[in-house]
Image (cartoon, rainbow, N blue to C red; front, side, top):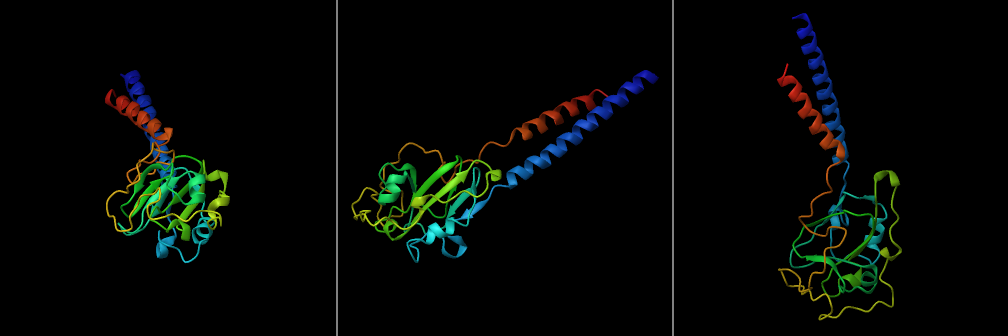
Length: 222
């Protein structure tokens, strides 16, 4: 009997230890998830609109640090503005040609940053991008990488950039309240979608669940 009781006590100690480890792991996992930053583009006062000057969004972005897992929040009234992710060449020319993903026409729009590197966004409404409603950012793979520099193209529109006409490639009408007329291209790496899911939770979360499961099994057989 004494041996049986001793074995049960050891199993209880072992199960308790695993539960403690799992609890600590869950706390750490929660800290990682909570580290993601929500960036309100242009600040809560301005949002996503025709800026006061062409360098406004470049200056705002230079004060931000973007990391994979962060989100961009574009605050704008539906039917007045939109958000289109484009490659650098289209960003410089203020055109929606070769756009990445679908046009976000309903405000506010949230974009989850799922990959590192440079990302470019413009408003596809005729004339808005050429007045400075465009955003260029550089996303770091982790917060330990330090502040990411704003891409060179984040400043004013180059003087040689053509002014988009009302029937230009973006095909977006200022009065349209529905999806933009621009044909969506293949989904891009930055997850430009209002419903984009955040990156998978770290491995530590799965480990915690496994430890809890094993600990529960040990307690059942005590």
